Every structure is written in structure tokens, then in C-alpha cells.
Image (cartoon, rainbow, N blue to C red; front, side, top):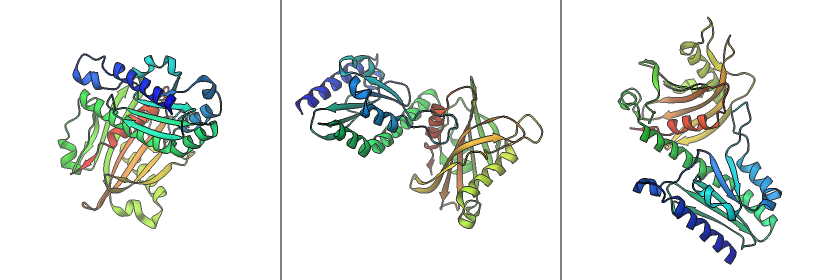
Length: 326
């Protein structure tokens, strides 16, 4: 336990140094680092053994809904003696301590904001493996929430589109970066697009009746049919007869969830262009609005054939999850 306390104090002391290098008060307390990165403090022997394998299986597992395999998080391993530089980039830190009493501790925003420091300690390798198995889902959930909020803060600082349009049309507030522009905007449909070096990212907003989603209680086929209908109506390629549809070769992932205390369906999958070769991932939230008696659909999709898409999906998710109902 004494050794664990020394490590934790060592890390927190470095956090203070790392987080006070900025020129302003805000910079001095802000954590830094790329989106979806985790700094892992663990010795080389454990990292190259069963404990490291377990960490990679949990935190570098493939992202759902991408045809090309990409890890959930980028893992950076550091020995405690060389961890000072990593902390300057780390917003999410996992400390693995073999030799201390069995335990799992979370420290949030102790020295930087936002920051998560997770400490997993046990006397044996088996004890560490058991704790990783027990707490990995919680760690993943907290880190994903932190990264989404970080994206939202970055978007706000960079500037947002006027929210009045979304308020009038759908009764919502949503934080869409000003780098997006209107590709289509009419009384029933909004398509926002942002060009990136390798393609574009996109946000769609529209609403559908209850029956569109709930007919025969076959939710996933109904969402696929809805998406394909919208694609055929609005999202076309350059060639005649080309339109966006749900890719048939990969069955989408469907999750029932809650969205700001409203029932919602989260669908992740891939789209393709009928009669064309374009394709990419999409993330769809179909949210039941009992007050207005319809489902609000907010979807993000990506066309970026030559680049990784994990962080682009998180960017879209952060935009969608900024929705607030009025």
C-alpha cells in the first residue's frame, strides 16, 4: 500500500507540473492530448505479459460499426520512471500497480480538467486481471463520456452554427461547428456537410411518425428502410440512379438506449452508394419525442476512404449528443 501511495503521489505531482504550463489561468488547469488516447503506467514485464494482453483486449478492441478494424482507444504505455512527458499529453491515465493491496480507485479532475486517473492495484497478476475484467466497462464508459465532452468544448471554442434554425424546425438546441454548411435545407429535412482533406463528414436531421419505426415491432428493418428511403430522396451520387443506402453486406448494430431521458435507438453500421463505389460508416440516433408525437432522427455519416474514421465518428457522436430538447 505504501508503494501504491508513492506512485499515486508521483503521478499527481507530475499532473500539477503538466497542467500548469499554459499562459492563461484556463490553460494552466486544462488537460491536453489527442482524442481517444489513454496513458498507461505499467512496467514493461507486465505490459508484455498477461496484464498487457488483457488491457489491449479491453481498451484497444475494434470499434463497432467500422469495416476496417480500428482500436477503441490509442494506448500509450509508460514506465513510472519515464512518465513525466506523457502526462503533458494525457487526459486519461490508468495506473497498474502490482504489489499493493487489491483495489480500484478513480480520481476525476483532481489537478487538470477534464482528467480521469484510474488506479488498479493487486498483489498478484491474477488479482490485476480480475480487477481489469471487473472495471473495464466502467473505465471505457467514463473515458468515452469525457472525450465526447472534450469534443463539444473544442467545438464551442471554434465557433458554432446559429442554433435558431434547429430550434424553430425541431425544438432542439444542437452544437454544430461553424465549419459545417447546409447542403440541403427544407421544411422537413436538413443535411449539413463539412469538407475534410480525405472526403467529408455529414449530419442529417429529420423526423418520422411513430409507425415508421415501430411497425410490426421490427425496429432494425424499419430503421434500415427509413434510412434507405431518405437516401433515395435526398442523398445522390454523381451518376444517374445512385443514392445512399444501408450496406447489405454488414448488418448494422442496434442498441436501445436513453437519450436525455427519452427512449432512443442507436444504430451503427455502414452505408454504400447504389450504382456507385462510395461507402463509409454511419451513426444514427432515432429519438422518441412523446411531447411532439414523433421520432427525431439525427444521423452522422462519413465519406473518407483513405483515412481512419474512429475519431471522426466520435466527433459526429459529440455533435449528436449535444442535442437538448426545449
